Length: 149
Image (tube, rainbow, N blue to C red):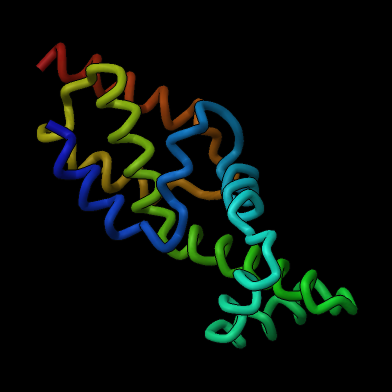
């Protein structure tokens, strides 16, 4: 039931590391996005330089945001972190929907077709101060609504 939704979202979010949210079950969205961004920063010099060649804008923006670390490798790492975090926020609705659909699939909540508009609207309303626990509760409530219908 959820396979097509999840497959589409994963393919659209491959560049953002948005799929990583499915590894979490609690915490604030802002903290999780920061952890995802941080955990995907390259550690190998050659990977960082390869990434940096085509991401000069992020290097400049991250330096403005965080300051100059006076170390080229750290500058590239902070730029990569900044880029990944920005991409997560720019695609927040889809990242949250992926989390919701994955949770619902894993917990046998079969309400997606009946509540796809509600899921879309809820994902749009989620901000960085939401907790995953609240999103999970919304999914559980959908299941209760589905049973009543």
